[in-house]
Image (cartoon, rainbow, N blue to C red; front, side, top):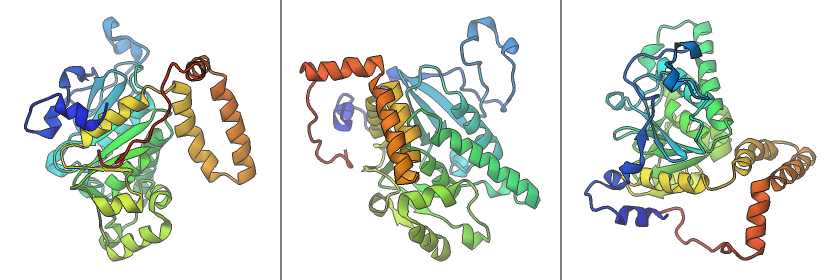
Amino acid sequence: MATRELMERFDMPNPKDQIDNSRTKPLQMEHDGPMSLGRSQSDVPPENCTSQARRVLPGSLITSQRGPVTLLRLSRPAKRNALDDTTIAGIESFFSDPPEQTRAVILHGEGKHFSAGADLSTFADISASGRVHFSRSWHRAFDRIENGGVPVVAVLQGAVIGGGLELAAAAHIRVAERSAYYALPEAARGIFVGGGGAVRIPRLIGTSRMIDMMLTGRTYNAEEGLSAGFSQYVVDDGHGLAKAIELAERIATNTVLSNFAVVQALPRIARSDPDGGFLWESLMAAITMGDDEAKARVNAFLEKRVPKVAYRSGESER
């Protein structure tokens, strides 16, 4: 369903409220208490024992479910959703084992900003070796996003700065509202990126652009970011979540195996040498085409039971 169609179904003044919230349900993960990792299955009440043990997340992360789409919200608006070690551990925990029914995830921020980056107050006095471990914890968490096998759509508004940009870069699709702006102020603070940005951000915008941002403090707005490669979509303020839901629900209709191949194999093929890439491509094509659901879908197309692909105009701004 297109964003415009989604919004026309509701007569409410706030665009974010125009989403059909009756379809969005809170998950048992949602809570306001401290994070508790390593809880054993035996500690979980029998009625909550599913394939995923009830995992406790920090209050800075709020989860909800919309059919096959799981929403994960950064919830530190007073801190512009700055990322502390507890939130990073919660992100790693969530993406290590998302709810069983999840076929796409939406990552978004509460309030006016997606994330203003690392909460510097939480590790300013950490030793050098401690900072290495801190950085590596970010790497583990964001690797779970990028390589978890489930497509992730990020909604970006306001500040997408430093570690917040590193987090966004780990997602597979990024929808920016017009209020979004991008910055990497680490050099001005006398520090360096530590959440995988040195690897992921150049893939999006190129190494020379990232060098420019870090050395000069250059910022990009949403429209400039679309051209540079920070996002694939730009929408009006307040419409980002609706657009992300539209995309995630569309993604969720794909086969599980083809989505897995796109988010797991395609990036690795693109980074490999051509000979190895061609071989990996052939193997993934054979595996996905052998899937029973794929065979049924191909037959439906050949028998003209599904429509042909049509061009969608204005796809980046709907």
